[in-house]
Structure formats: C-alpha cells, structure tokens
Image 1 (cartoon, rainbow, N blue to C red):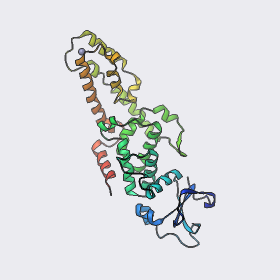
Image 2: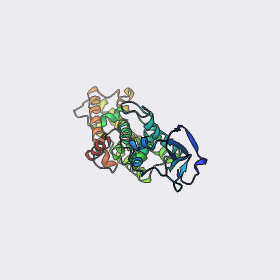
Image 3: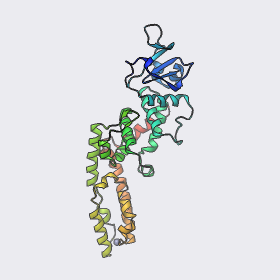
Length: 310
Ligand SMILES: [Zn+2]
C-alpha cells in the first residue's frame, strides 16, 4: 500500500520491530523503529539514503526521521527486517525456511538492493524450483498459491531461470489459478495475462507431444499378441487431457499400475520405462522454448550470477 498519505499517528507500532533506541522510523500500514546503520549495512538503498533527514521540513515522528515506504506490505517489511535483525530468521540453505519468509525477504531485498539477502532468498527458491530434471523430479509439488506468488515474484526480480519449473508447476493448476482471487496477506496473487497465455499455450503444445511411441514401439520385436494389444490399448487411453498437467510423471502412474500393465511383457515394460525417461529429458530440454524463454545455457548463466555470494 502507499502509506505516504497516512498520518503516522494512525499507524500501529510493530510489536517486535519498534526498537526504542532506533533512529529511523519506517512507515507502511505499520511503524517500525530501526537503526539506519543496520539497514545501511545490508542495503545499498538505505546506504545511499543521504544523511538522515533533519530539520522541520523533513518528515519526522517521535523524534526520529520518518521514511514512508511506497508499495510495501507490512508482512514483507516485517520478514525483511527480521532477517536483518534476528539471526536464523532466514538461514541459508540447506536449512529450511518458509516460503512466506523467502518471498517477503526476496521482494524487499531486490527493491532495496540488499544483495546478500536477495541471493540467500533466491538460493532457497533454487531448491524448490529446479533447473535440472533430476532435482525437479525430487522436489515436492507446490501449492497453486505458492506457484502464483513465485511466478509473479520471479518476474518482478528478473529471475527468469526460475520460470521453467514454475510454469511447469502452474500447468497443474490452470483453472484454479484463473478463478482464484485468493491473496497472500493482502496482496493479490493474480497472474499476468502474458503468463496465463504462456501456460495455456504450453499446455496444448505439451499435449500434442504425448509420447505414443513409448507404448507402440518398445524398441525390440515383441511377438506376444496380448502384450501388443495391451500396449495399443494403453496408447489409446492415454490421450487424456490431464497429460499436459503433469507430463513428467503422468506415464509413471500408468507404467507402475499392475492392473494396467499386467498383460504387457516384462521386456516391453522395461523398454517403455526407459523410453519415457528419455522423453522426459527431451521435454525438459525443450521447456525454455515452450515457455518463450532464453535457452537453458543462458538461464543457467543468469542463475549463476544471481546465486553468487557478493
Ligand atoms: Zn511385449
């Protein structure tokens, strides 16, 4: 929210971040009393903030200069300041942190050029939104809500290397994502039209990539009629529109289902699994193109720059 038109007297003091010996007041919907020197140590923005305003012409409150934050949510400000002040509030990976903290710190660290904190938050996100297939398959699925926030934030902070994995996760929730007006701590979490267009276009593109050959061409001569018929049946039933929602594990469910594959011979089943793994690698490599992003090498270069500790 824009707090510049709200009198500080109308704002409540944050219970934890009103430090009596602080020499700088930050105002959004809440008031935070902090230390300019601490903020300047972490953030180029606050470092470059010219001398703390003084004199009657400058905004002040309770004897200290007042900076009205523009467009920052109190929850984000709280997460950011706590990361600065409280050890282990946002520990570096591999230690865990909640996505709300990661998102809040990243948003403000990017805006106020707290480069180490931006890097730390992005390192956490790199564990959730992978840039290689193996890690991606290992990571738990994220909620639609997390995906929406992550997508908007990755765009906001220019971390395009996060986008393939986020878009892929988004394909699982298209209708929810469109219809939901759910917000996070007051912030709308709606997707940009361009992102929605990319997701829907990718869904139809991936749907057309259904690897029917996995079932029909096992890679060796199979003379088992029942096996051939069973595989044909599987290849016909697979045009399921849900395929594009989860293309990297959709067939695993079929191949692992003994009822579906009991007539398929063991050799064919092993070949089908192998071919599906190869198809997954091909899809993963093609994701940047499908999502209208720079190619993987460029994305990985961006990631490397973003995750370098400065
Ligand atoms: Zn067979």
